[in-house]
Image (tube, rainbow, N blue to C red; front, side, top):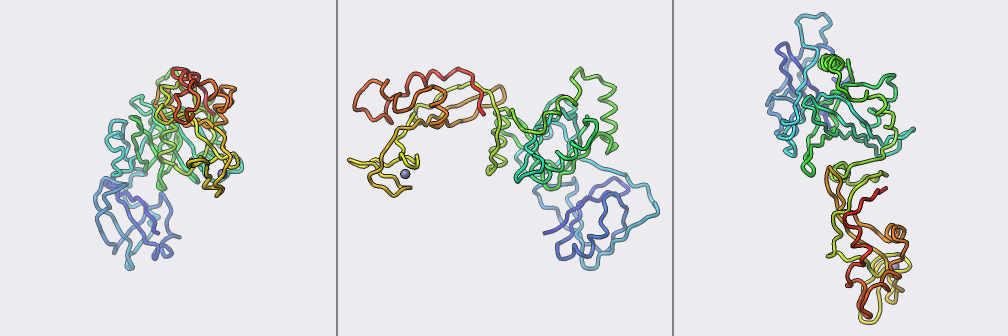
Length: 359
Ligand SMILES: [Zn+2]
């Protein structure tokens, strides 16, 4: 729809400039990041109040009459880069406000990635970054940007230490700060930027006592272990994505309100509707469906980062307890009671307080 860019002038003022789709053709061949231009005959308008890329409230719009010419002879000392770095306190202040897309700099500690070779659809990379305040945050990068990130890391001979990520969207999920990359995010490693170079040498000088990043990064080929906070963020930020992961946590409580089983259609496993003397399956359009009892248990599982609601279905519960739901119902007292209304069997209630690994 349009191209946004950031311009920096001799006073180190950064301003957003926009070229509408109808005019992109005329200017696109001239646009090269890092080149110097003179611009004339442009419109000035207010920035949208959402997702601001600069501190300036004004922006430049390219118009029909805009002159845009590259200057090859250095006529004035332009800064070679400009960032809006924010620390963790400032990021928390901006989280969930959709007001600003700030930049961050930090130490790359670990990377989890779903990117395969060759890449499939829907990709995600989660990078753990330690900010200067020693607070660690997770940066999520999606789809094409995730593939770029993964492949850039793959091509590097030495694992990078310092990362700069621009135009990121901070979010609070379950009381923890998460950062999402946007379509405008650029990633720079180590000495690709001057800001990063300074940070890099500080890190090298200050022996952190941490293991070097290299061995931690070797595992990035496949996303495996996730914390519950990361899973929560994953679900909130990417509702349509399905991934495989491993997660460990403790069952805090089994929800008794939600029951423990249901009568399922023996053909399609959908919950049957009970009528006076028969069961109806709406999916199979069968008014005399044969029912079989299946597990469905809701529980809250937590690790030291957050808690989340997990629904355990028949296959998992049968395997875990080596007992079918139809057999479990025989252990319960009270003949003639509808098992769906019966109390949760003790072996399910006993899951509370125990640790499990989910995959
Ligand atoms: Zn059915």
